[in-house]
Figure 1 (tube, rainbow over the protein chains, first blue to last red):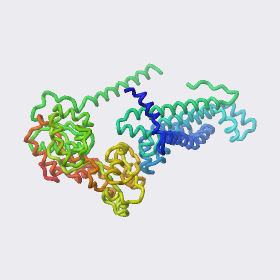
Figure 2 (figure 1 turned 135 degrees about the vertical axis):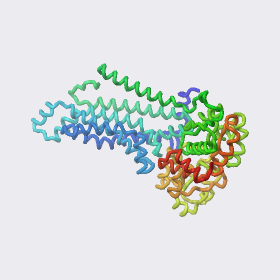
Figure 3 (figure 1 turned 60 degrees about the horizontal axis):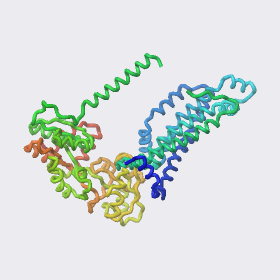
Length: 224
Length: 304
């Protein structure tokens, strides 16, 4: 009768850990979406965020754009994309990239923007080129906030990657959708517990990385 | 946060609350008001357009025949509307034979339309329910292939599949994977080994696209789905009755449904076909209202 012990028994069932559709494979797919989407998102959003933060131009557009992206319903976006590219992993990956961009963009932009202008002026006065200012002064100082953006993007995607199963994209949502169809709430809870555990583990890891990203000699004020 | 802002938010939240409360006030399963006369026939429907339109056809046919009807449509799942019809709050509701049988007998192994229809009266009797004549119109699961696949491999029936030497993948909702008519049934009854791809939109546009794209070779679609003819799909025939028949039938509460009105409903069901359901669903997808579609159907079929 106890859902929690049933769920734990479900996870430890040896049959679940064999073959191509094993739990390990599903967790691998889930992490693949998470890191893949955040990596692709970072390649797009971090340069954009540096550009906006450094030039101090287009900030209004960037803020509106990221706000708009955040408001998109992820299942709707997923189905729309899948209706043009078909079932499989592409549509979920593209959806998760779209979801990962806003926190990455706003983290980078805010980090660069928050660098003390006097520090940037000092760097220029020493004869640094704009690229040197960006990569040796602004970006290192912005790194804690950039990492906060990465951490938030990771959490966002790991929690939403369950939707991939809606369009045959695999990952841990497979267990949740099949449980929903059969009203197997033990399996649903077990799969959810695994997603929660992944989210906690990644959150812990990236909190640590964020702390390590703090440049020496600076004090980061607590984020409100 | 200023006091003014807090007040604004509170007012907005209250407005939303009131709006939501307004939605619940129209509970379709609420007990009938005492002023309702005995002669009024209360017609219910399930919460999807095809069923609502069939209910509307029943309603208009009864009105034409001089009965006074009350519509309580969109009642949701069997768990909700079966108790409503048992209690007499609703007297008539369009049902589907296979689904109805499985609700009352979860262990049933009956599959053909005739067997299922034959088993229903005895099962419904204790609840004070009965079914009228069943129609030939069916809304059931079916396995479909593309026209190109059908022609290239000379396949029109599920029994043709076992001769194929190519790997086959079936696409459908994940519950299909564990249903008796899923991959296990294809193997045990037709000797076909298939792999399974779950697409969670219940035979919706994603499933249709997956079949058109060749991501799956066989797709589980409902027989009344306009997408089948629109895409030129070939529905594989099922000579061994793997699929459970699901014909449209009128479910009535024996005490509250007037006996002399049975003929009206039976004359509707006599004319209702699967092609008719496809037509209804096509018009519904085009945005026509249930009342318009029902009136058009009654006129075309000269009922009432």
